Image (tube, rainbow, N blue to C red; front, top):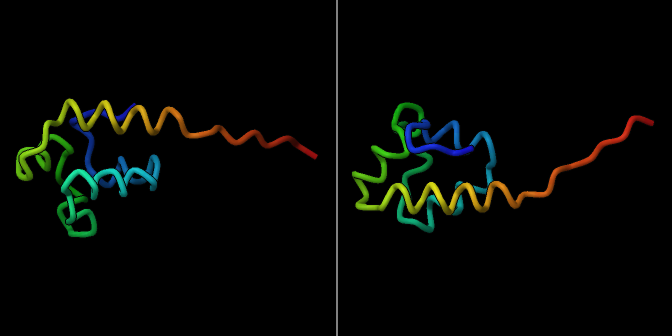
Length: 73
């Protein structure tokens, strides 16, 4: 589950596809050094984005990601 107190880098590590959503939301600096220490909430404040709305979108997309079932051969 994505939360607003998570570091941006953590979110991208959970699901790299979420980087696209962050960029589409106005966070075009997801490759800058701030991703290693800035929380989602802090980044949203800087970029004028509603953090609760973005958390909802990120979780909706992340939760819809298909789970890979790997069977032992």
